[in-house]
Length: 368
Image (cartoon, rainbow, N blue to C red):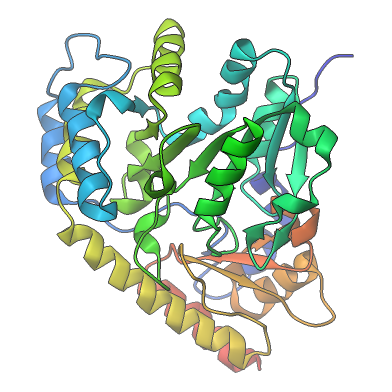
């Protein structure tokens, strides 16, 4: 049977966009987590210099890039990872989508990808693209309920995905428990930590704190430094697995452009611009969250990330999204885009300028 790709999740929002656009001043699109704020000037200047653009960049990343990422891990998380255990990827989405394929070549007897029941759709799609099984892991208060898994699925598992802070819920996972579980069951644990800089309830966390054996962590410059368009991130962890992935990705021709690597290395060396962005997201989460709660939504502040994960009694996610589009011009993502368990929720991304969010809030206040 041939494979027909499903519609891309956000292409299902056209009806919401039409309704939201009816407002004077237009729609306020908070559906996709695309950064809207400016990246650091010194990073843009380095990109303009096009350092290294003439030649092919190393697939695993330049020494400058890998050392910059390793120094950031040490500074931000107090973990020491040799630069040889760090490697570049072309944004983290392509890594998520391709990891199962590459791991299955290494362990063909395993055919199952475990992923959070409410999560970024690419974890499951990565399994589909590899011709493998995708099995949801239930969540309890945002934490992977690993004890609930069927032993048969565990025995077939190739990789377990953790995402903390979570997209879309903002919950924090128990990273130590997941790492221990993976080692106990001989299952690689891939920890997607792309929102770690935006951890609100505690200091940022990484699974590397709990050891590197059978663990790969994934980080991105996209959210941290408002550089989603340059497509750069890195993975780090288990030395044998990093070496394997570096080699197979080199064969596949996966390379972050050298000017991007040079600029991203500089970005990882600076924390001041990130603190500015943290304060911006805190302000927006408070502004919009307060307005939504006043409108009768259940909308707790997240433990991390820059999304609000909200519900309202008597409405499913699509109904609530339609109401928000009509009442305020907000375009949001219905929760079932992130799995059936999210059907009663919407995700709202704080990725519009303050004045646009204030406009949506003012409309919402008038509507109630």
